Length: 567
Image (tube, rainbow, N blue to C red):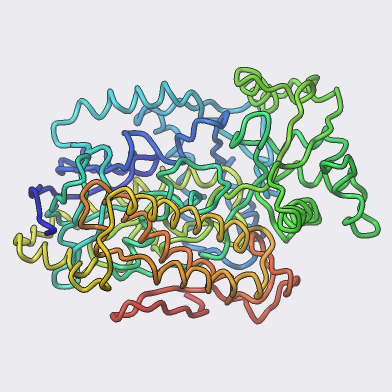
């Protein structure tokens, strides 16, 4: 029996505790609203606080004259897939927002001089964010000063509840896996991306796309979901360590297990190995837009062909450690603290899923189109398009966190809580999972066998996504992957599995992974061209026929609807 254990009443529910969630929660609390933050792990988590990276950067408009140039950089990298009004807001406001990092406990430092961010054609100021342990301590101290700001850790949101077409509450699983009802006037989703749906990723496990499913099922639209960032990550000597692509400027070769160069056989005439690696050193994520693409494509095709996931050995020039630019020293010194020396150790890399350029469709105030539902951070489809300029994702957390809080505050002032009865909440829960009595007949299964099935289902989805929805895509791969997912889904009795309290969070993850993986593969299948982060081996060129953005919604019957349109 699925019962509600307790009810919490608050003004606004914030889901997620990365940079965006922290910023919007503090802003709303400062406005005097009662804020409940729910986070899957502990306060200050998600990709913002991924431990195996040296730093994050924020790219900042240099001056008034740079605004047009900055917008041109964004447009150039997006390949026509960004939203101009969001970009204009970012460029106008980011200088004012970076000075507010200290207000939320974030340690930031402006780099000396100007530097070109990833994919940027022009240099500008870059602020580095680092010392994650100290930032976590700072955030906890700041939040502790607020009586109107409550944090529920190890809590998963199951579903959002609407009344009269607007957000009225949510159902959550608390740290004991008991169902909690929240009554609220509004909700802000800041749950981040979905990198952990891939077998190899550079994200914490809680970055699992849960917010995408919450928003979609509440009536919001998703857009640009096929544009997933893959970046080289270190597989050895320390797996899942973020790789500093700028070091490729000192790389002499990338080699396979047999000692042969990965690049020699794949580079087109006129493009030397040195040229390819130099271009690749200027950007982290893979893109079809630059000639450096041959490196990532070659890595992934070799992995698909051999099923060898050990990665590829890098051969560096000894001059690497003589570069004393701060951008190099910060990274290389951090690697040494982790016990990694790029010259002395055998360093291997491979493509890792990292970030999503697409997400929930929003306006310049973070509004999703569903009254009372705001979406910010990586979960939103923000200023990026087919590619994303480096240093814009952290800045967008600050810019749109501030704007969403201000607009949400006004919304809260004009809205009353809509009471949700226990019976209504339990009926909503059943609508999400159905009734266990409706499951197919068969022998009773033990808690351990259920747990094992859930684990295997999740791991199978991650394996399928890794091999079908990676850097190299094709209709054959994607279609076969969708068939495999359908077979997995037919064996997954979500309604029955949720009855077991111990496994409930894993059930939610499996449910979300199943829907999200199919959604992603369908989006990749629909875009029959190569553009930015999306590369189709069977459609290797950018096509004007696909110059529109791909929107995804869910019908009242629960089916996905995909449509190319200009918003």
